[in-house]
Image (cartoon, rainbow, N blue to C red):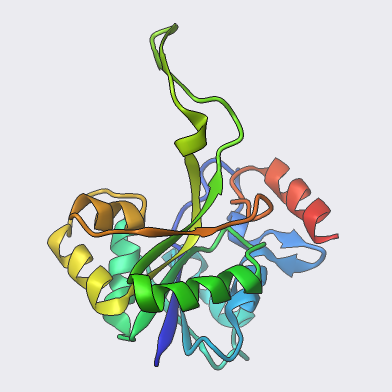
Amino acid sequence: MVVNVIITAGGTSSRFGQSNKLLEKINEKEVIKYTVDAFDFDKIDKIIICANPAIKSELTEIFKGYGKVEIIEGGATRQESVFKGLKHRSADYVLIHDGARPLISREIIEKCIEKVKTCRAVSVMTKTTDTIKIVEGDRIIQTLDRSKLYNTQTPQAFEYDLILDVHKKLQGESFTDDAGMAEFLGEEVFTVEGNYTNIKITTPNDIDLAKVYIN
């Protein structure tokens, strides 16, 4: 059984500032290195990084000693980057993960690998703790039932042939979530319980928060 990982690293970090957030360091170690290290264990065969061309050379240097890592050029959108990663190398199962989520745990990754074998499509999720309201203008229209609301994280894991077919059928669209693409085509997607520390680095403040969690 071959299990590959696709790590998205094609963004421009426009909300982060002048530098690319994936190259920012936490305790002298790059964000993207934390992410890759989490997946670099015996149950994973290949780690495919879909990179922004502007940082491809830096990533090549960072991971030059990693036998499982393959770095390819990403696309103009997240969806296009993942599709390139899927076409780059086939597998039995594939996990798709945001490069900017460096705190993913080995335990959750292994749960995804086990569950996808029977469920074909799974997504890491956490229960929403806030009350969510629908607003038009400045007027509240509806308060949603919080007990049924979840926040989507990554990784998301799929039977390879399933998610490749999904990407082929929806090529050229602008989905930001692979599970959402599968749902759109009527595929069932199941949940794996996530962790609230599995944050996505978006702003410099998130770097400070990640340091707290790591330390």
